[in-house]
Amino acid sequence: MGTEHLPYREGIDKLLEFMLLHIDVEEIQSTALKYLVYLLYETEVLEAIDRIIPVLISVLNSHKDCLELQARVCRILLKFAIKATEDSMEEGILFSDTVINVILSIMQSRRKCVELQQVICNLLMMLSGSEASGKLIGKANGIQAIMKTLRMYIDNSHVCIPCCGALWSLVVNKENAQIAKSEGALRTVLQILGKHIQNGDVVELASAALWTLSLQEPLNDKQLEAITLLLIEAFELHLRKETIVKNICFALSSLIRMSELVAFRILVPENDRDGLALIVQSYHEHFTDPEVVEDICIVFLEMVQYKDVVLELISQKLDVTLNAIKIKFASNEDIITVVDSTLSKLQTTASRPQNKEDSSTRATI
Image (cartoon, rainbow, N blue to C red; front, top):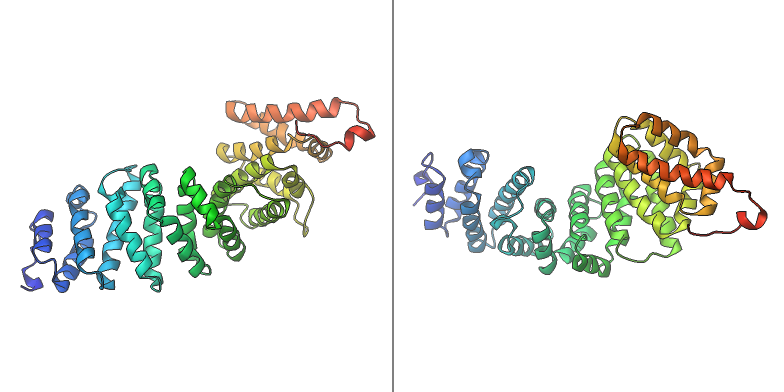
């Protein structure tokens, strides 16, 4: 039977029935998938996702050597995953180990097909947003697969973006975090950030991944310094992009909490790049966005946990910026709480008599 007998306009269930009846006929599957793509945004199709996906899996299992069919099915699954994300749906067969195992198998067998790798990486990024499927991806060696693809295509921003996005979500899970650590994910993401530092889309997700990954393992001073300087450089290059500023502030806050060295790397200009001045400047760029302002203020709050850092912040008149923020956001309780805590640290230290011994002592408050 040829494709001329395909049940066009007879409803999605008739199409699925026809596909299953002729599951071994590559030409019929190819044409049916093209038609399914055409129908993708029809309400009937979107409501039938859980009936469509088992048929798509059957197509993949019956045509493991056909790259064209694999690519088409993966693109359809990606469309479904995007729609599910938009609708905040994180359950159903799309998020099951059935789908995850099949797409990871294709990812492994089609390493040299960069276009398909991009599609699968984007699909994994979408699926990793679900806590349950994130665990399944980890158990199915998905993190190892992502890292292998990342290293193979580290110069390709279209691969790096979804892989970093997937890692960002996946390593929230403790078991996944340990896998990522053993795979050297932090080091690889740092390389990606350095290679693609001019690309805002890469920086946005690489800095987010860096933030979550840095929480999972102890870092030595050399690593902390390298990460901090790279984040400050990225901060300067993408100062006007809200999401990047937020992600880098998250990362810096976490790193400052780990070590006083990070706070001093922000304070001491490097290559004419003044970290504190950049953070203050970012406030002026985003002073109408309360979420960004709060994240910036949290960086300041973390910095004042160290006595020597407080002295430097006083000398650089951070209180002027904080008081301006306090006036502008007087009705925002979250921001005011952070600002008041930071100002209290500054004011307590400023009013305390300083002597040589006191000013040379570093202590965590």
